[in-house]
Amino acid sequence: MPRTIKISPVSRIEGHAHITLHLDDAGKVQDAQFHLTQFRGFEKFCEGRPFPEMPALTARTCGICPVSHLVASSKACDNLLSVTIPVTAGKLRRVMNLAQIVQSHALSYFHMSSADLLLGMDSDPKQRNVFGLLKVDPQMARDGIRLRQIGQTIIEMLGGKKIHPGWMVPGGVNEPLTDEKRQAMLSMLPEGLEIAERTLKSFKGLIGKFPDEIKYFGNFPTMYLSLIGPKGTLEHYDGHLRIKDAKGGIVEDMIPLDEYARVIGEAVEPFSYMKFPYYLPAGYPDGIYRVGPLARLNNCDSCGTPIADGELDEFRSQQKGEPVSSSFHFHYARLIEIIYALEKIELLLNAPDILATRIRALARGNCNEGIGVAEAPRGTLIHHYKIDDDGLMTWANLIIATGHNNLAMNRGVKQVAEHFVDGTKLQEGMLNRVEAVIRCYDPCLSCASHAMGQMPLRIQLINAGGAVLDELVRD
Image (cartoon, rainbow, N blue to C red):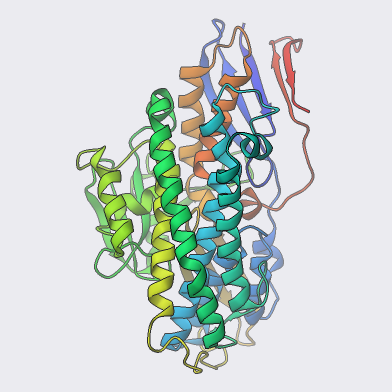
C-alpha cells in the first residue's frame, strides 16, 4: 500500500525544513516535496517604517548573509532618493559584498557539505560533521575557519561589525576607507587565495568518487537567471539580468533591473511557506530556472580575473559548450567564485580612488518606488519598495535568492529519491543523499522565511494505516 517517508528536519542547512517522499505500493518514489516550515513576516511588518531604516531592518532577516540584504535594500533606497551614489561608495559596497561571498561560500562548502564529500555519503552520521572532518583532515577544517575569518574580518573593517554592520546606507556608505584598513585587508588576500586554490584542487580530486551523485543530484534541464556585467562578465552588484536556456541559448538579455516583474512571476503552494518564482512568459511550473553560483558561471562570458577565468574554462570543458547542469556542481562553482571574489577585492582595493572621502549622496525621498537587485551568495536577490509622500513604507516585496531555486530543489529531491531510495527498507545513507541535494543549493531558509520554532531530528517510515514500520533517530 502507499507509504510516506518524512525526513525532519533537513540537516546542515540554515533554517528549518523537512522533506516528504510519497511511495507507491511497490516502494517506489512517486512524488517528493521540500517543505519550508517557517513563517515569514518581514514584508508586512516593514510597512509604516521610514524607508531609510530598510537596509538595517531587512538585514535582520538573516545572520548568515545580512550583507546581501544591505546591498539590495540600499540600492532600492538609492532609487527612492533618485540619486547616483559616488563612485567610491559603489566600489566599497562591492568589496563588502564580495567579502560576504567569500565567508558564506566557505561556510557552505567546509561546514555544511565537505563532510559528505570527504567522509562519504554512507559514512557514520555521528562522524559525518565538522568534528569528524577535523579528525580526518585537520588542515581542511582549519582552512574553512580561516577563509570565513578573512571574509568576515573585511566586513568588520568596513562596517564595524561582522554581523549586521550599519555601514551601508541609502545614498552610499557612512564612513570612508582608511589606508591602514586597506593595507590590512590586502595583506590577508594572498593567504585566502592560497586556501581557495588548495581547496578547489582537493575538490577536483574528490568528484571522481561521486559519479551517481553528479548524474542524479538535480541534473535536469532548466533555465538560468543571474546578473551580468556590461561586457558579459561575472557580476554580483550591478549590471543587467540575463536568462539562458538549458542548451546555453540566451532567452532574454540586457533586462533592466526595474523590469524584473516582467520576467519573474511568484507562485505559492500549500505545502511550503517559501514562494515559487518562475520565468513568467513560460508559465508555472514550466518556467523553472536556477540561480546562484552555478547559474552565474553558466550565464557569464568570463569572470574577468585571471585565475578564476582559467578555472572557469576547465569547469565548462566537462559539458562541451552547454551549461553545466548537475546541481552537484554548485560546490564546484562556489569554490571558483571564492577565487574570483578574492581577486576582485584586490583590484578594487588598489583602485586609485578607493580612499576618497566623498562616499554618500544626501537627499530626501524623491520617488515613490524603488527596486534593488544584487547577487547574494545563493543567487539573485530582489528588494522592491513603495513609499508615501512622507517617506514611509507602504509596500515591500522581497524575492529571496533561495526562493528562486525552490522549484529546482523540489524537482531535485524527487530525482535523487527516485534513484537512491528503496522504500522497502530505510538506510541512512540513501536518505542523507536526499538531504545532500538540498545542501548543494545552500538554501538560507532564515532569509526565505521567518523562524517559528524547532523540529526533532527523526525519520519515520509510515504505512497508510498510520503504523510506524521503521524509524531512524539521530542524536
